[in-house]
Image (cartoon, rainbow, N blue to C red; front, side, top):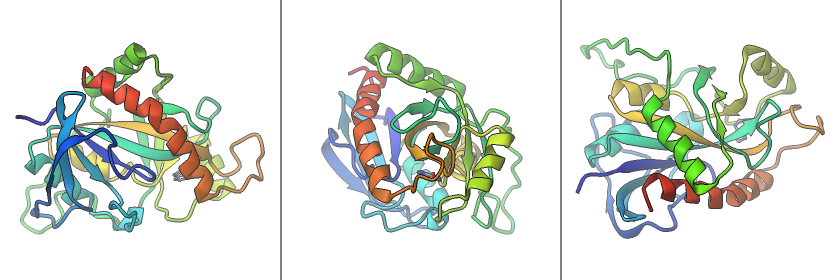
Length: 249
Ligand code: HPA
């Protein structure tokens, strides 16, 4: 049976609760090993693959994730479409904690990561079109599934990918706002670019876990991991309903 959708879980999402009849795969790819096992099972009656981006015990920081291996491994088990769950901070006013968003643009502020398949000498040089970094048809499916499931979702927004693992300064977030970013996260790139190089359909479902530094009503609020995890857990019910609707369940 072909895989309908691959889901990559971010911070706070280490398993898909309703995945049934699970088989585990750990393909070793031309780029090395993925962050952990790929769990393939049935979700809402469809075959779905799940991978925890940071590892199931959250042991990999964003700059150490082997994004190439993760995506190549999902492709190797038969996935062509990837829904990336990304835990993010909100910068502009529509993107407060617990909001779900499906961004349509991104800006890459990461550095020093292996960010392309064209890394090794002798590999074909690719210049993939990346004007619209997320696959439009997959984004439309997410947006219409949210409507069917009656899940509030912001359609659009610009994701700024930072290096981490530290959070940003207020000045960095102010600059990102001036640049046009609505959301900030640490894992959106190079994942989206590599997905495009691999020919995978790819879209992001961002889960806002906190106001980014200085962006919320209390500009001096300290961001804690516990708040991040609590807000992701609170938003996951809606994200799961959206996913079920997307899969036709
Ligand atoms: N900044 C960067 N990444 C994040 C944040 C943030 O505020 N919250 C969750 N992931």
